[in-house]
Length: 191
Image 1 (cartoon, helix red, strand yellow):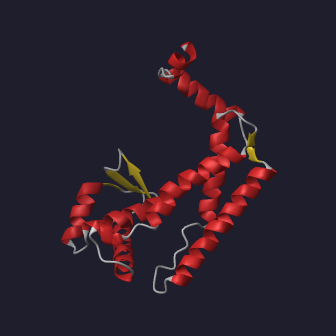
Image 2: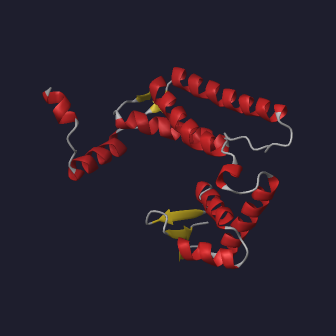
Image 3: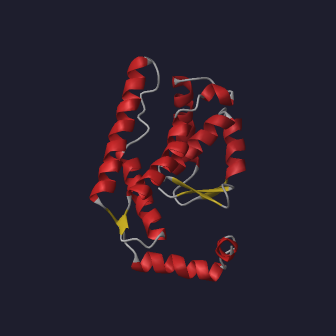
């Protein structure tokens, strides 16, 4: 009973900072053979499943929601989970948790029907988002910081929909071109 009470208490910030510093400095877990096999198998499985879905539904988006970049992110996430446990090796459980997080975030977002958010479906949306991204790149010089709300309002005066600009910002953030600061209220172009 005392252990459950101790586990529900907050960890002081200074102690948490020391733990994180210790993890960064002293722990460098690597994928074990079994964990790597699970990750590789799931990567291939997801790509094949998406290809099958695209073959069954002609005219649907040809984007495959898991790329080498996302696979590398899954490896880093798995390593981070192992690092939190101060483990020298990434376990299958770490890989499974990283895959779960990936599925509920990235895959769920990629499979969302744009119709649910009130926008048109398909190529029109993609083209509008690409145009919005181009607008954002033109408007924001390298290393320039802007107010996100004002940027969306300015884009709307230029004829872009709020949804297209928000998706454009999301895409640029995901690719590492723009950084969101202050809980998404500030945008900074970093490349």
